[in-house]
Image (cartoon, rainbow, N blue to C red; front, side):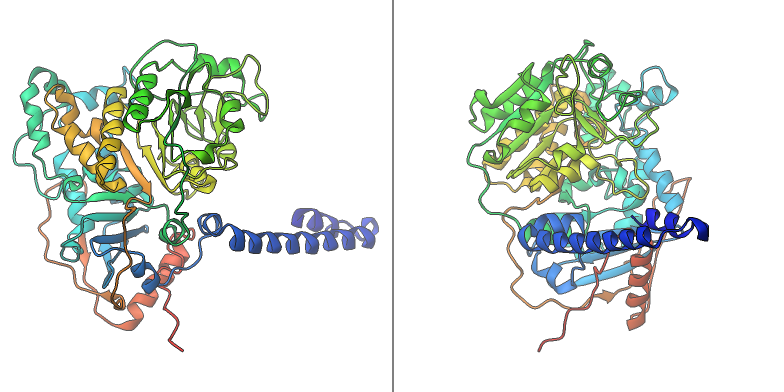
Length: 545
């Protein structure tokens, strides 16, 4: 509307029409009023959606009241020349500035990702390096020291770590960081086949996931959206799952593929190209059956093969189910050679001819329109936690965010192409642990630790197999509000550090003097430099009346 009005008033005087200009101005005022009214209605009737889609400032004491005694919220903001970290517990808070640049973080994260991503194409030098090189323990420990050493004393007694990553940190599951240097040589994946006992060296590493159950949030304000506004009456039926879609190629193993120009003919994907671009994943049917058995769910709620269609998903009342799973391929926006604004999507059984209702791709926009009431949504597909391709996008893909909008409270998503055997083992064990009373984050932590210690497959000890899945959203269903009054945030000196040697970067924590304007200046920088990510995070609480 602004563009139309600008074009109208920019015409030569002889071509301008006052009536047309006034009509456009009137329409602009009307649309603005309607949008304001809709925003107000959303905030009033659907506060969780409004909080997730348009985050509002969260006062420090409000955040602290949402944390349990054994929880900590740790949020990062990455700028070009330094990184900020906020650590918040129910009774205290800490702010620090870290002298590690964005470029240095990118180098460290890239080094680690290069030895984790099983989706690297076959026959490439990177694929060869993934299997032939040991895990980069130096980089994993260096990154831990750079990010956590200054706040480590504050995390004593924490069992559940809630993380809000930023920048390059969004591309890495924090569980692969090492809280101490490796004590024994770590073999490569290829060596694990020849020396299976060497897998124990990986199991003995001081991984961060051993110390904390970890949950990731897309923004600080999501804590309020998922806890203060969460519904307490999830669906009545235990489970529904969709998987093993009928696709053209045969194959088994990692999930995910590169698609070229699926949407070249318009907004509806070419169903034939969808069918031929991906391999079928018959093992996903077994994965869903195993989850259904663990949850004592009826197999009638499993939609496999020809039944796993987009039309089926859209036509069902999914709000009846406490747990919803999609075990299939995932397609990210702008993936591979598809350099256009395509939405991320999940691949389901395509019809003979694609339509707006069903073209075989359940996109983020379509997911957001579903009606869910789920404690868990499991996306057992590749790269569903990857960036969605938009400038400055959070490290959760449009898929993950769309499920939150639809009504999910927690997501289990993956950072890279998933080994099918590992995926099945992780998800089924996670539900078994949850059935014993573990929180969501703890259930995933126990499942990961059990997988890395398994003796029947030495590869499972390597983080490439146990680390891709992360818990996003509400990870502790049994949290309780802190009972005592919170204290104001302080700018504390960092703890003494001993840096791990690494060739690429050397980062240390800057100690800030405890003066009032430091926090204000840092917050101003944060609000200025991030897309609402930390908006109002340290907003002063209103004075008591």
